[in-house]
Structure formats: C-alpha cells, structure tokens
Amino acid sequence: MDRLSYKTLDAQGYKGYLLREAPERVFQFGEGNFLRAFVEDFIDQMNEKAGFNAKVVVCQPRGGHPEAADRFAEQDGLYTLILRGRDNGQPVERTRIISCVDRCLDPKRDWAKMLECMHNPDMRFIVSNTTEAGIAFDPACKKDDAPPSSFPAKLTAMLYERWKTGIKGFIILSCELIDHNGDELKRCVNEYIKLWGLEEDFSKWVNGENIFCSTLVDRIVTGGAKAEAPALWEKWGYEDQLIDTGEVFAAWVIEGPQSIKAEFPFEKAGLPIQVVDDVTPYKQRKVRILNGAHTSMVLGAYLAGKNIVRDCMQDENIRAYLNKAMFDEIIPTLDLPKDELESFAASVIDRFDNPYIDHQLLSIALNSASKWKARVMPSVTEYVKREGKLPRCLTFSIAAFIAFYHQGVRDGVAYEVSDDPWVLAFFEEHKNDDCKTLAHAVINNKALWDGELAKLPGFEEAVAADLERIEEVGMYQAMEECLK
Image 1 (tube, rainbow, N blue to C red):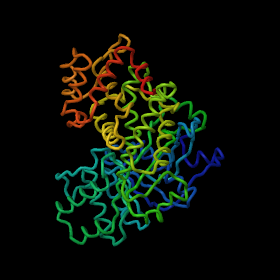
Image 2 (spheres, one colour):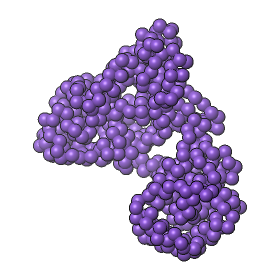
Image 3 (tube, rainbow, N blue to C red):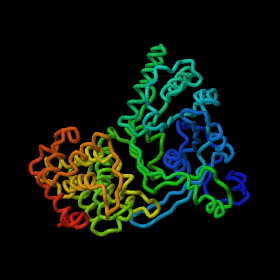
Image 4 (cartoon, rainbow, N blue to C red):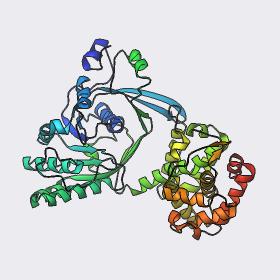
C-alpha cells in the first residue's frame, strides 16, 4: 500500500481540501500529537476558510530523532486527523487530511536550517508546546552552542538571528501547561540576553517588537490510533504513519492585543479561539468547571460502582449530581457571563460522555488531595462567601474523597490509592477512626487545606454526617440523596 502523499492522493482522484504551496509563516517548537491535533487543525481550517495561506515549519524541541522528522518528509508533511466525540449531544466523527505542515526539522541535525528560517520575512508566528518542563532557564546553555539544549535558549538564539536581519519580530504563542506561560518564556529569554551579554538594542527589540502571548489550550488528544491503523489504511487506500486523533471540543484563549486578529483570521474561519486582555478568568473557568467537576465526581462514582467517566454520564443519578455541582454550585462562584459559563459546562457534559474515549476513574483519582484543594476548594469557599451556605454536592465530594482514601476496598476488591507519601501516611494513621473523628482530623489538617476548610461554619459537621450516611446506605444512595 502506498504511503500518504500528494502523489498518492492525486492517483486516487482525491477531491478534499489540500494546500500544496504557500509561504512558511509559522515556526513551531513541538511536533507531537497535541499540537498536530490542535494548532495545525486550526491553521489548516484558516487556510481553507479564511485565506490564511500559511505553511508551518515544525521542529523537535530537543532533537536527536531524525527518523521522526523524516516521516514528515516521506508523507509530504500530510497526515490524517480524526476528531471524535459529541456535539450538542450527538456522536460525531470528523476526518481531515492536514496539509499545512511544510517540513519537520531536527535541531541537532538541522540547526542551520532553523536559523535560516529567521531570514524569511513571511515568518510571523512562533508556537510552542515543549511540556511543562520546557520553559526553564538553564545557565549551562552558551551563546555559540549549535544548538543550545533548552527551548528558551534556542528561541533566544533564533530571535537574535532575526534581529540581525532587520525584519520585524514575531507573535509568540506559548501553549505549555503552566500559568502565565508566555510571560515565563519572555522572562527566560531575557535571562539569556543578560547571560550572553547581548546588545541593549537587541533587548529592546525583543521586548518591544515581539508579542509574547500567554495562552490557555483545551482539547483531549488521544494520539496515533495504532490498534485501528491497519483497518483505517485499508479504508482510505493509503498508509499513514502520522495519524492523529482527538476529541471534537477545542478552545484556545490567547492573552494579547486585539490586533492579532488582523493577522490570525480565526474569526473568519469560525474557530473557537479568543483574544483577551487576561487569560486568568478563562483558566479559572476550566479548572473550576472541567477539572473541578471531574474531581468532585470521580471518587464517589468509583465507590458507587462506576469505572469510566462515560458510565457516570449514562447513570441518571450521577449525571444529575454532576449537573447540580456544575450549574448550581460552581458557576455561581465565577465572574464570566453566565451564558458563557453555562455553554462551557454543557460542552463538558458532551466531553465526559464521549463514546470514543474510555477515561478510567482510577487514573483521574491520582493525587486527589492536591487536585481537590486546587480545583474544588476555591468553589466551596467562594460559594459560602457569596451564598451564605454550604454547597451540597461539593461538600459531599470531600466526604467521598475521605471515604475513597479511607476504605481502599470496593465490593471486596482492594484498589490502589496513589498520592504523596505523607498524605497516605496520614490516612494510614487514621484508618481506625470513626466517621466524626476522621472528618475532624481531615478537615483540620492544615497541611492539606491551609486551614481554609476548618473556618467554614458547619462544614466539618456536614462532612461527618455525609461519611456516616455513606457508611449506612452506601455511596450510590448517599450521592442520590444530595439531589433532594
């Protein structure tokens, strides 16, 4: 079977959208599944629907794997993207051949070519996703390294090359999963400017002629579909070694000036991208609604007999519990427009009910102590502040958390509780406590909650009562009673 390429598609008489020739306008650090199912999807659609007319040069952040770069060359940069999930409650599957990637470079082999890209006046955007550890300052990196080892050092060297040409700077879109990712990247670049003793004029150019955007990205990407690849190749009539898969839902919030819209035509393409003054409330929305809903539901749902998120969505009572937590208890604590928050929450329900992703509850349960503190506790404390009472489902969720860590057994079968050793040691120390004693110990543990939960009037008593109810009637019925 022939490999996916323009030649193969021409032989098949392929009639779908393809962009064969266009200027290289985007340079991307990261060639992995996420960016290919997220940024490249958006760029490809902007090319088709908004005349963006852009090709992307992708590179490996560290390099040393030229065979990965060669796979792109073998397929003319083409690959098949499959997006699956629910849209407005209905299951959907969308398949698209992505044609915006021009080439893939390996820094250790192709460093000179990466610097050469900086001489291209059409090159205007730099995108990165180098994992949470990628944006870090390494003082061992030297100016003359070819290439420097860290991503920010590579970027600094490339910006320096750009500055020497006299061409204008870049719009830099950082997609790493850390707070204020663009600001942190800019800080690291400035550290290298100082370390390497680069010119003051270059420093002014970096900070005045380049826009470092912090961004929030949101899409579950499930990767290469290895198990089903042979059947897909047979169906399509070509072999694709770069298949990528993800969910239908996507959102990209970019913190930066509105002028970006004039160069990045996402509105014309109808894409779920926003340019905002401050990404913070959108990150808060994601953490509180999406992640908070996960954390507030999964531990109780597991003890109630469920194994994957989709099972929970197909259970009337657990789904109602989740809806009440999101719409009645979490959304009232947030400050974005209510209709926008409710629309996001509705999309979360579709995402949790994705028929194509088996998201295991026990995998979500990892390190739930810190997750509950970061994702749920702010909603609890803010709800009490605004409403003057305890949020019923979110309060119950910490009782479910305590029961999950305390019991360690479901239907006679032990399950593993994974968390920091000191957290596990704490629960081991209290393994023989009754419900009231256990609730008191957990709620008043300052190492867990910084003393915040102990301040809430009636909270400890409510949690103790929920623990007793879980013990008396079981988790499923106790969750159901939260709806009354």
